[in-house]
Image (tube, rainbow, N blue to C red; front, side, top):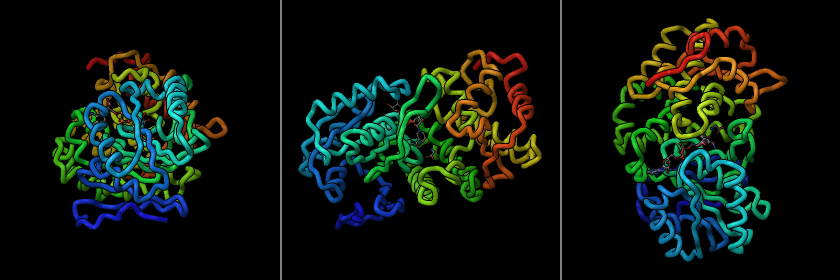
Length: 388
Ligand code: NAD
Ligand code: GLY
């Protein structure tokens, strides 16, 4: 299969990470200025010369013109549609509207859908691409740190349901991912921080040296240092590519990417997807809880748990419940949410636990009492109305 790098110009300012999935393998390019090259890079891979670019209102204002210009210069007939900013767009209603809108444009099976934006746009557009005409080519141009290091790579698509996050979706790989680190310059600090939680995750799963590197460089990275961002994005994409290549459909090791997520999804659902708790913020605190649970079960040391919490606190991510939005957090409600997680098997909740930094593993054997005690401690026995 083709790679996406026919460019005769020097590419030392760009790194290519290959996601090895046989006939569905693809490249993730990491570098600055890739938005402006999107058309040429796509033209080298795709048979068709038509595309629909999906974005949200904010990202469209920043990068849509450049994307469309680049596509047109490369010979694509293209149009764009935008969805409302935020997690609430990741629902069946928005998806339905998108599908009808795109079909109304008279697309063909070779028409590419291009996701230009963060994880919300990526998950939604990928899902649409996987079901439109039974599958059209899909290209990711992730513009948040979270999307560049995680959601843009690996082919998980989907929307949320009233029953929980990401419960409706598909595995559908993009044909190309363009992680343009220049776009991270316009990302608000809070969003960079949220994405940083997913970067830290790779260190904590199986790469203690990377975590130590992040302890040294994390503050400057979230501050926007482009070289550090590029290094971290490329490293994270390599880690994700390895994990996805080994277990594309999450029958085993890919589930390690859910470190902190069993807690995070429950926290996000309780918070109501209203922007008060970002996915990455919930992941940071979820990872802290996963470490504290592991320490309580005697699997890792209390020092490891404290080290991880200290790093999140130092960069400005939640490490205690009182840094969460001030709603009435309730232990029973959170546990009920966890019971509806996608990873529940035979009624048993799946957790990613750890034996130390870089030693994550899966467990379905967490005693209910240990979970309840942990959450009671975090939120208070009758639930906590946290204040900022
Ligand atoms: P998001 O898509 O809502 O983007 C965050 C905000 O940043 C939005 O307001 C957006 O308009 C803005 N933005 C995006 N790029 C910008 C830029 N370059 N400059 C300025 N503003 C910009 O959120 P996200 O954090 O990117 O993604 C979160 C979603 O990703 C969640 O729905 C989560 O479930 C999903 N996710 C999916 C996977 C997966 O494997 N598919 C993995 C992790 C997370
Ligand atoms: N973000 C989790 C995964 O891609 O599997």
